[in-house]
Amino acid sequence: MTITTVNQPSLAPPATSVGVVGWMRQNLFSTPLNGGLTLLAAALIYLLVVPFFQWAIWNADWIGSDQSACTSDGACWVFILARMELFIYGFFPTTEYWRVDLVFALLAVLIVPQFFERFPHKGWIGLFTLTGFPVAVYFLLVGGSFGLEPVESGKWGGLMLTLVLAFVGIVAALPIGILLALGRRSDMPVIRTICVCFIELWRGVPLISVLFMASVMLPLFLPEGVNFDKLLRALIGIVLFQSAYMAEVIRGGLQAIPKGQYEAARALGLGYWKSMSLIILPQALKLVIPGIVNTFIALFKDTTLVLIIGLLDILASVQSAIVDPAWGNVSTEGYLFAAFSFWIFCFSMSRYSQALEKKLETGYSR
Amino acid sequence: MTEAIEQVSTADDGLMIEMVDVHKWYGDFHVLRKIDLEVKKGERIVICGPSGSGKSTMIRCINRLEEHQRGRISIGGVELTGDLKNIERIRREVGMVFQHFNLFPHLTVLENLALAPIWVRKTPRAEAEEIAMSYLERVKIPEQAGKYPGQLSGGQQQRVAIARSLCMNPQIMLFDEPTSALDPEMIKEVLDVMVELAHDGMTMLCVTHEMGFAKTVANRVIFMDEGQIIEENEPEEFFTRPQHDRTKLFLSQILEH
Image (cartoon, rainbow over all chains, first blue to last red; front, side, top):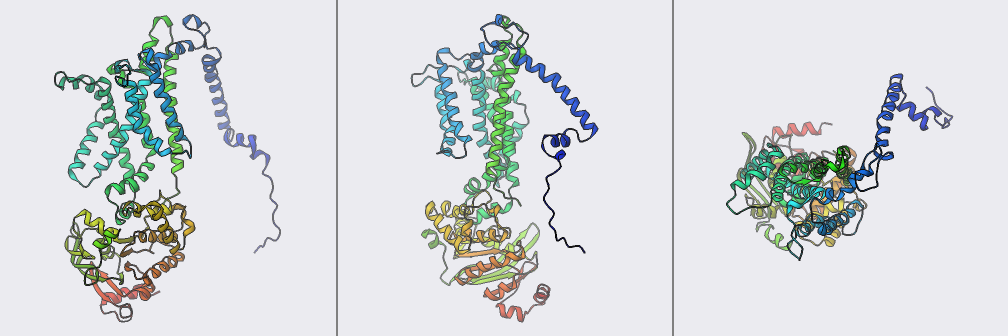
């Protein structure tokens, strides 16, 4: 038996295991093979990334108004800047741009509070963003009332159209999806059957065919003289399609809630809707935030499909601009710009969902 | 609040719970066979028996977490039927504590307690929180009010669960193996709260294997096996002179160590 009587002093770790050198040793050069791979990767990065940045930034042309400004061998961002109005507003009348700007500004003002931990009346602002705001946007963009000149949806386009489609899709698909998911788990056979049929029908067809049907077939079945807007038809198609996906994501969350939670809620005398809205859904939705945001992101990118029914979203308006013979070959710049625009929005949604998950974590696990 | 209490109160004969010829099946399996049980106001009943004997199912029939298929169950003179309004009215007056606590993990302890009074009893929030705090003090954990259930120990969680039921000011409390999921050193703190509740005159039905609790607190001990009430007696008699062979066997098995 040994009994230690002298405390061992606390020594500093060896220099080779801490700091930059230590980190590199552990992560980059732990074995000869890893060392080789590290060098290979470094070479690849040098060969690919450096030329890209030279093209995109150092050698790029930024200032000017037409193709004559693009003299260097770098990217011709002049083209993007010169056609920016088309990419943002589509064919919205120039004199009415302020209406779109106002919508963007409103959206920004309403969303900013959601990124703060504590903001006065944050919940009400959120609720307004989802309810009052879309109504305001409708009157602002469609016009025809309050002395605003009507702008038909055929003139909508670019980023503005993309955002309208995505926002309406997200705001409407989530509640419909929740109702469908609850309906699918209902005890009432009629409601359950209706929800199952709806979900399976919409999930079983591609979005493209939904959009085609909405724009081509639907008018054939409508009575003479009844004709509603192409954009509206596309929107309804997107919302119903995405709500079916959303329903399945949410159903996954509902199934993960232990039976005891339902029982505890019922035992306290809470009725169905109160147990669902106060106890079950807050937990279920939190569990499936990654799935919900995944669906949102897919929805956001799927909005580009409206180009096949003749609506020019941001990608379609870029496409229509790059074939302009006045600009030479600017397709790389155009597509990069479109991709980057999508990435900004999708990445923000992704980051927001991660922050939300972290905030809602209450440390309960069983 | 007063309206509900008036509607569900003791019947004229002082009966809180009346079960007459109650049967229940899970598919073909006959879980409850002819249960007859009367519980008076202020009675404290301990129900024991081997696992699968239908103890939990029986008390879960009392607030209709399980549906009985034959017979009659009345709570405070109101019969339990398929009528949802009736069921919700009875559930307001019947508190239940579960084996696995079933606290709401997304709400703080205080919110867990105040939720049902606010949304079911329509108590103003401030008042509901005040009541909640008073019950937290009664179960001796007022300092945990702002924490989430996941941050508490099992014993603390179960005490919160008891307080949550009490906040609804129930006439009857049902306990479904409240200490079975707890570590041994936490059982006492929960039993202490239950003993105190018994002293205050609460009508209690408790499924438990805590025989010490049964001896000190119960008016009656019920032994169930295979879906039937085999024996029913005062604790003293029940433990010293069990009548039925199955009761003797069960008692010898749990009291051996």
